[in-house]
Length: 125
Ligand SMILES: [Zn+2]
Image 1 (tube, rainbow, N blue to C red):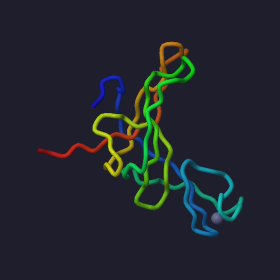
Image 2 (spheres, rainbow, N blue to C red):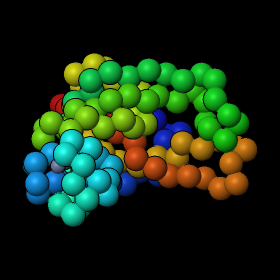
Image 3 (cartoon, rainbow, N blue to C red):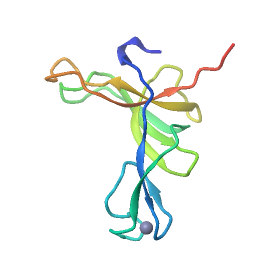
């Protein structure tokens, strides 16, 4: 694990499920992005593991961010694609990852911000 990303805890992903058309999305949205239903959406837990679809490293950003940082898309097993920060340690396209948290803000931020960070699953040896 990249020590710069600590503290690390397991994360819970609260997404949306539309009971009208069956669509799911993350993060939660009050209006279904597929059928526009407003009265048929409910919170639902998303899977907390997935595979990396694509990622990139960001080297230029406002001072409130800790540079460089990695962002990308993670495909969850229920078909939902999540845009998130990623821990670069052991990362590759197609890698198995799990939802965790990490500090992504830089020194210029008023206080450290912990948010969703997907991390590569380590294989037991
Ligand atoms: Zn819908």
